[in-house]
Length: 317
Picture: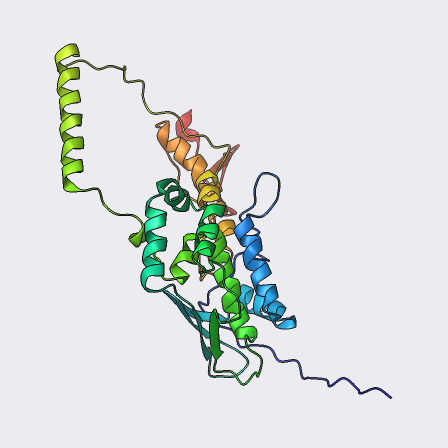
């Protein structure tokens, strides 16, 4: 006879007020292209988690992330610290440490990225070029983490498995953050964006300002001081057809702590505010009262808040 499977008691984690909630059902689904495919670095992060052989703990970690069991998450160069509430009264504390390129290797990576400003420009608009991963690989410093001598993690929970479901929840939240802002991958490797983007030298800034001033003077001399090149036609009327265009462009808010999903919540606010904004723009009178507070006259009766009020219309005659 085969061994009976051991049955474990179902344990429900304690509810966390103000916890960090994952915004979507799976890693990176919010960064979809026009063809419905997820961005490649989101898929790579998912493959990375699966390579850790977390198994069923990955699903439990996803449930922890969606329900907001992570109450605190701090990201530093090469280090992520988190507090996760489980089934016990005392929350668990864990950390994930990433291997950082050091010394000449780090300097070479930073210098190589600075020499390719277009790569940095794409990072600034939340895109991750393939060339950046290839650049890291060329210096034998992988961009995406792997378990073997690359990532160290620890959790104070009694689970013998590492990573446990609490750390899996942290990995899941990191996956959403990386999918939305891939520059966080470089931060986890100890290379923040501030090390790649430098200010222009003062001499260059002075020459640019002097050039702009000379162009302004020449334009004024040609057209005259009072010349207006384009007539004032007024501001364009706002469009009410798309209420969440800016939200769709910016994506989700990382590490959202609200009870509802941020995108869904703010979309309802946009939909209600847009018609009032158009009314205010056109100069019409804006009525900010709720529908149940508005007064409606039907015949000789006046209704307000579902109550009938007597009105004397004799003075109209």
